[in-house]
Structures are given as C-alpha cells and as structure tokens.
Length: 499
Image (cartoon, rainbow, N blue to C red; front, side):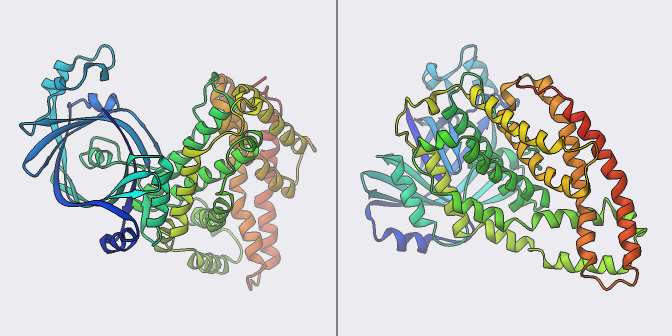
C-alpha cells in the first residue's frame, strides 16, 4: 500500500513550455513521456463508490495494472488517499487480489467481483518530471487528453504534483512556484469523479444552500475549527466549479458565503487561532470579499426583472426606473470577467495559502486549554454572545423603523452564520424551530433591498414625478415593516436551543 499525496490543478492553456521553463531551475532527477489508457469499474449499483473506493485498470507500454484508491480526504486541491496497485496480465480487475483487510466487515468481495462493469475511460498523454526540492522528491505530471463515457467526451488538461518522499510543505512550495500565470485552478475533484458525472452516474451539480458544519460533541475546539474550515472550503470549491460550468449569481453568492464563514471563524475561534501558526490569508480573503461586493446589487437587479416586475409596472417614473436598472446592469462584471477572477494568480495563490495552512499548521502548546476545551463549551459561549447582541437591537421597541431593520439585517446575518458553525451540536428539532423565524425575517429583509435600491436610484433620476415616487415607495415599505415587527416578536419569544 502507498499513501497518495498530491495537489491537482486544472489549467486552461497548454502549459508544457511554462513547466519546462520553471522546472529548469530545479534539480530534475528523471523525465518521462508516455500515454496512459484507463478504464474505471464499479457495479451497476455503484457499491464501490458507496465504500468511497475508486477502481481502475491502467494500460501503458503494453502492460496492465489495477489500482484501488480508498477513502481519504481532500483539502482544496490536496488529495490524500491510500491506494493499492498490482500488475495484471489482462485489462480486467480482480478484487480478490487486494489485501482482505481493506474491505469493511460484511463486504462480499466475490459478489462485487462478479458484478463489476466498465463505466468510463480516460485516455491522456502524460509528461512527468521528478524533481528534488528542499528535502523532498516530487513528481510533476502534465496530462492532456479526454474522459469518455456514453459517447461523450470531456477534455483533460491537468497538472498534478505528487509527493514521492519528504515533507508535504515542499509540495505547496513547488505549487506556488508553478501557479504564477492566470488559468491555474486548484482541482477539488478527481478524474474519476468527473467520469462518474459524465457517465450520468451522479446528479448534475446545482446551487446548494449552506447547511451546518458537521461538528460532533466529542470534538475539541481545535478539531471543531478544522471541521468548520474544511466544510467552508468544500462549499467554496463546489460553487467555484459550478460557476465555471454553469454561471449564475446563486453560485457566486454561495461561494462568497463560504469565504465569509471562514472570516467569521477568525472571530469565533480567536483563542484557538492565537495558539496556532499565524495565518497569512486574512488580507486575501478580504480582497476576495471586496471583489464580490457587486453581487448584492446584481441580485436585487435580477429580482426586479423577475419577481418584482409586476410591482414595478405600478411605479411612478416607470420608464426612468427601467432605464436606471439597465444602466446599472451594464456596469456589472460580465461572466467572462468573473471567470477571469476565478482563474487569476492571486485567487489561486489564496486557495494555496489557505489549504497549506490547514494542512501544515502547528500549535505552540498542544495542551493549551484554548485548543483542548470541548467544542460544545465554545459553541454555547459564542451562540449566547451573538444572541445577546441580536436581542439588544431587536428589543428596542415594538415597532422598528427602516434604518433599524437595516442594522438588524447585518447583525442577523452574522448571528445565523454562528449557527452554521455550531448548530449541528444540538437537538435538530429545537434548533430548526429557533432559527425558522429569524431565517424568515432575513428573507423578508432581503425583500426590502429592491425598495432601498429604488430609493437610492431616485436621487440619480430625472423623474418628473419624484414626489409621487417617494410616496409610492413609502406605501410599499409600510406593510413590510409591520410584517417584520410581527416576525421579530415571534423570534424574540423563542427559547434558545443551546440552553
């Protein structure tokens, strides 16, 4: 058995000359150039995939080998999985040749073997450079080819850095040397995962609402932090890939939510971070959030085109409003500009910094109470602090004005993200009941944003019916504020689920 540790990049251009140029400054131990043909197998019911196993037959230079990759972990583009590889005389796998201890209790290997079927294939040209770097040996592979399934093809253009020996830190150092031109994207999914999707064996990706970080009550505060960070990073990269394939505002909003969740951990876990290796990605995350600041207006404009179209037909200055909406839409970043951001050098280097810190961080004192305290203790303190802040504004009166609700909206968003971190530690029914009115309120507060946008836009428009427009906006606003007061009173009366 070997434990595969590698970083994967998807690249948009032919980077062979770029790699040759960068690697010329390193000590190259060996270079190879060959073609690989791979067939991936599973049962019709995807029993191997259910076990988080990947099975393939690889053919090169007229020889065959079977490889099974077992459950591992992925942090950004870093893949760590145990694998077994055996030579074969024929291009068909035999599960019975693998060690028996790799199979969970109750797995009938003979039945699996009889049910195997070929699902898809990957064929690609691979160039490799094995280099010595610091105290490590790393193999850099550049693959160009295709995945084929059901008569369809998807291109492969990837760079993989595999650690042969030495510290993982060297893998990240080389990666940062290579990813210095636009078009490099950390690959969170493998060729096999892409093949399953192309074969129609996994659902087409779609925007996912952020759930809760899967913390457990037996975790320490330090373990809980890593759970939250990994959860946020998976959500981030899923929606990054989704936007590259199916651009939508929804995908970008979820991507940004994942970034802000990581930022929130800096406050919620401040004492934990203080005991660990200093981070070097704070400024980069803030830069990214600022790059996506336009999303709020983009969502409002989109909703005015669809959800609020009928309401706008009754608005004074309708022609001027329509023109103003179109003017602002034209100022938004295009899909191409946004994809360029996701393929930019700084964006890629930000993810490399974050994933390297998550893998390589160390504690100044592993036994520090800040690190070893139960996660539930930290959760209760954080939830209660956030709740008291929310109550201090929510209880200002039986009826709040528009400005107060605008302040409450930002506080509520923060409060709900505290719940995203910790709610999984508590009773599901209680936390769902408690969060429901506040989620409802946040939705209603979002419904105010188009009215706020029109208020602001009215100052820029040359409308002959300006006073009439302002009266119409006040009329639209009043019943919504009344509804918010009712929801707020309901939320205030809920019993916190962590008490």
